[in-house]
Image (tube, rainbow, N blue to C red; front, top):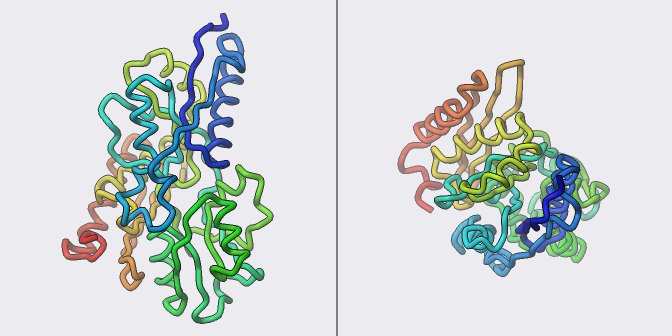
Length: 313
């Protein structure tokens, strides 16, 4: 039976955030044709602090949680019923009373390299400028190519592409997942494989947050959860949590399903200038995936040592 209740979906207002919110809405409608109709789900745009800060890196402004703070506050107040997030923007600890139990099927987690003239990453001239707002990307760029320069690139996808076209940088990096969702794969010069640029934890994954006490919403969302994607994302986030990771620390991690009951995680910790890099890899059964993430996080911390510069930021 179709419900008369209207559910409000909270999201940021960027084109990518809206594309993710509409994907969530459409998946809910498809999963519950007898319970939901299109006007049962309203998309509510919420302006976040992170959206308003464009003149400096988020690591200087308070961290990636700035993209979700106002949305989570609206969720706790009951102004919205669910929130759609890019999981790579999420802190590893959620506010009390909120849960993320639903991860949509994960998109391509790789980073897309985009140059103004079609030059590949390896063929960039010494001294070329790469624009990015990500410490993880900055550190890996400088680790591979210390002869390059990195400048701050903030803003939505179209803003960054415009800055590139206008010559503010010779190249930039964006998530393949976002470009795919926006129908902009034609701008990609080439996708960087994980051996060349290990992705951000949970890159390409959409997470749906709701109030833990909202049993009805939990049941609706359970139908659109992708088990494998959730398993991989939670493994990566367990590693990140062990390192107390935020956008202030250059950390990368990527988990894949490598067998019928096997998950493999690769993770890296770097110094912001790319001069130091530590890598770990391990596998486990599905039921030990969180333990795997925590173990590799500890291994990275032990390898780097307490005085590692990234921990001092």
